Amino acid sequence: MSASTSVSASPERILVGVAGGIAAYKAAELVRRLRERGVQVRVVMTENAERFVAPLTFQALSGEPVRTSLWDSAAEAAMGHIELARWAQRIVIAPASADLIARLAQGQAGDLLTTLCLASEAPLFVAPAMNRVMWANAAVQANVATLATRGATLLGPDEGDQACGETGVGRMWEAGAIAEAVLEPRPDPAARAVLAGKRLLLTAGPTFEDLDPVRYLGNRSSGRMGYAIATQAQRLGMDVILVSGPVSLPAPSGVRRVSVRSAEDMREAVQAHVSGTDVFIATAAVADFRPSERSDSKIKKRGDGGLTLELVQNPDILAEVAARQDRPFVVGFAAETHDVERYARDKLERKRLDMIAANRVGDDGCGFDADCNALEVFWPEGRAPIGKASKTQVARELLGMIAERLGELRT
Ligand code: C5P
Image 1 (cartoon, rainbow, N blue to C red):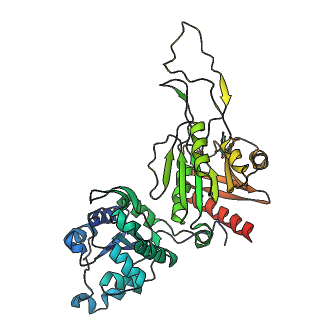
Image 2: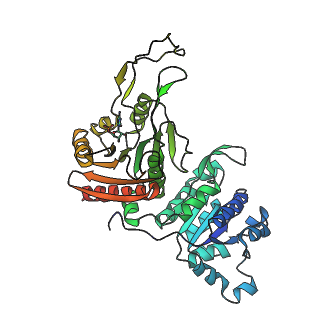
Image 3: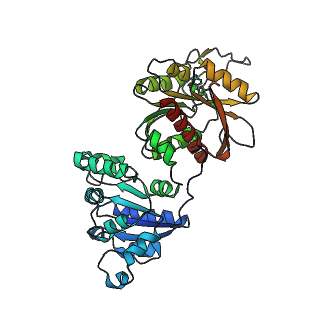
């Protein structure tokens, strides 16, 4: 399949399954977020979910009756559970308790929600929420792995404070992140087959090179392209570490972010995490130079005289990764104003990259500090364009190309 093959469009009918757990209150917010995007939502609750939130809450938010039982004679007179299973274009279970995950993994059908999941062909999204020790339990991990192997998309959990008073991995993703993930077109199955389980290390954003405690040399990179790649790679099942310069973006859910400031910090973080990496993507706009000295106190004006800064060159993080013996598949970015192919191919060879994604800066308001991008991608034996699109879509297509190249290199 071509990397640019489009996958199915956003769904219009989503079934939200709510299991018994304290995070059930966040499912109310999820229904709101989905409705705001114009999606029709129907809610099915387990018996235990009703102990945490009243069905009336979901009925008011979804504008639809809430189903809680397989034994509702009025609804089942018309085979309600099969009708619901067919109606759903996607099913998202939020929160998914350890118990519900176990029952889904075993293919049980003892209640309405598990029966629906068995009877539906809709893609299944699972947003676990439980105590950190339960989440780490081998039985839970085995059940989650079974669901993932069967094609379910796992959304989280996140790390952080838990309702039980502990801190660790087990918090349900925030409603907005779940809504966004469920509404996105399905990840390309061919890309997923190659990339799921692989580790991606990527750099993003600008670097700030300090002159003194209040001033620095920086650039306009927003980090959006790198963050979009990190998010989409996570959706494809990759284990993602994002080494990020100073940006105003939140860390994508399910992605480990390492925050850095200068090019030297970024290099250190990359060196610390590169071993065991399968793919390295350098989207960061790394400062080529840094001041040769950083003043500990604010540099003062000196009469009418100017100030001459002495700059020294920063290490090339990308070239260093490509020069390693245990090198991953290495992808660089190049922002050029002209002669895009010549400069990109030169960088591909000089830095010994496997692929380079070039964009012409200043074209159509795309690229730097913008929501959209357009790329020309080069590798030693070929090239392919990625037409102007949102950075999310461009990220998807680029990952598709990386998967294709990795697949070809393997065979
Ligand atoms: O040589 P140029 O700076 O145009 O190369 C751009 C590519 O190299 C980008 O992928 C960027 O992230 C990476 N780079 C780097 N370390 C530097 C300079 C650039 O990793 N010091």
